[in-house]
Length: 230
Ligand SMILES: Nc1ncnc2c1ncn2[C@@H]1O[C@H](COP(=O)(O)OP(=O)(O)OP(=O)(O)O)[C@@H](O)[C@H]1O
Ligand SMILES: [Mg+2]
View 1 (cartoon, helix red, strand yellow):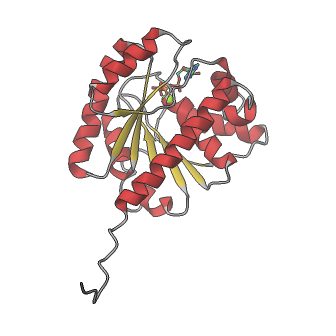
View 2 (cartoon, protein in one colour; view 1 turned 60 degrees about the horizontal axis):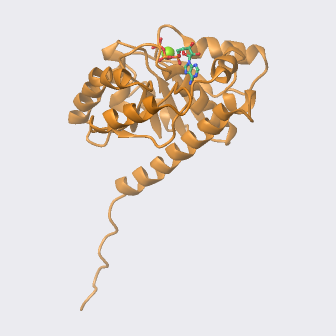
View 3 (cartoon, rainbow, N blue to C red; view 1 turned 90 degrees about the vertical axis):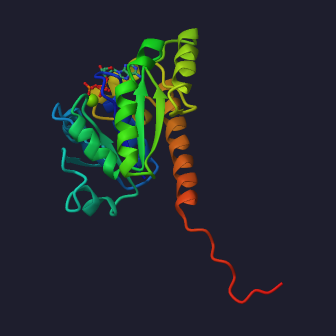
């Protein structure tokens, strides 16, 4: 599957989730390409630290607003089981390019109703991309959630109105995420017993289930048996 972590708003957790999802898929022995589409280079820096610390890493590559061209991402994607794209905030051209080649747009969203409202422009981009790519699917993922507050529920209720489905897995506000990235790892290896690692494992399991269902929908319907008579 090709998943773009996308959204117009900055600092919502795109890079954190992109890296942790890619690292978890790698830990499950999948072949993973992690695309750094953000000039800030969060993924690149994470990879450099990981390499210095001798960590196993997914294949990392930097791409931009032309990644959808046949000689770019489509030319390499087939060599991997999964491609995870970390998009920059705001740069609509890069996000559009990522959405042209993705199976799933994953939109991280904070836990408050205000976070949910701020997602409007990001959802518009996905809707626009869907006019060209009817098979592009989208999901919102609630992240940076603090405690079992009613805020999270409010966000979920607000998000339901957006017309984009919300992932069942919610990701908490946890120090382990920042620490793991600083160590060049994902939370699954950095803090395997932390709730953060449980959440990423649950999120990846949910994504793999999504992939299975998506593949079943894409598959052509079985042809009617030839020569069959009543
Ligand atoms: N679930 C989380 N719990 C705690 N801190 C988090 C979580 N997710 C992200 N953060 C922290 O929030 C900050 C922004 O996260 P991140 O860089 O992943 O966001 P982003 O959407 O990629 O930002 P940008 O739009 O600038 O690329 C970082 O300091 C990161 O460590
Ligand atoms: Mg980022």
